[in-house]
Image (cartoon, rainbow, N blue to C red; front, side, top):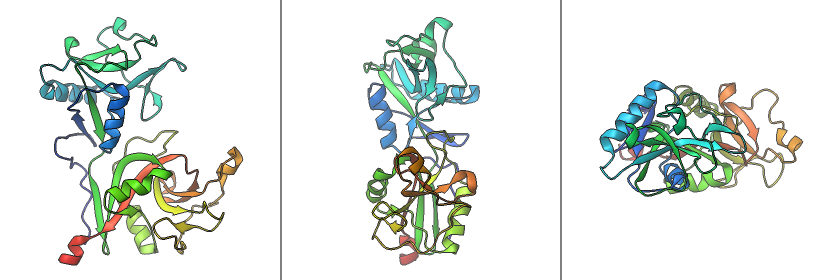
Length: 288
């Protein structure tokens, strides 16, 4: 049985808007702790890129913030060594601003985080990133996305991680990192990803999805991480694997489904970040 992608299904306590889910954090955190808290929720600090999105998030904060909340962090930070306001998760310059006044868009090292400010009717101001008192934060994530096929269910997670963390991520969810063992399964996964929702791709994370395979132990001997068995089915893109990372002093010992090449396989530097898909047993297929 195949369950369609729930493109607008958000977890409890989250609200949906144009392909993303949003929530206001419930505890006081400084910027860095807020960022980590959003990651724990399979998301990231909200990155507001349009007027429409800003209007939605401001409404969310105004409705859900308690009276003692003075502001809420978003995923926008001034990086002094770059001299630009940058979306923290995407790693790209901000395309949109809603600072209350030009004077509120300070750029000194003391005021390097943008926040939704109650005193400014939830428009943006800048402040120090270490302030906790009265502060909350807005997290953003993609919707819950699961499909099941031939006894397995596949959960696509918004979380963008380096390869060394993905076994724990899927293990904690009760599964393992995605393994593809046949052309039929490969076609199913590609179809899932073609219609899935993921955050915007960036240079640091072009929107690829990890496979649970690596040849870190022996170059050219690709093995599944779950049981060290040999990878017997592959769907490499033209010219792959090419171990491109060796040109930068590192091997490309891990494997991704390449978002820019119709989800064909590509070898990748394990230190890079990609999205995670976890595979687990379809309990309904056993009990039903």
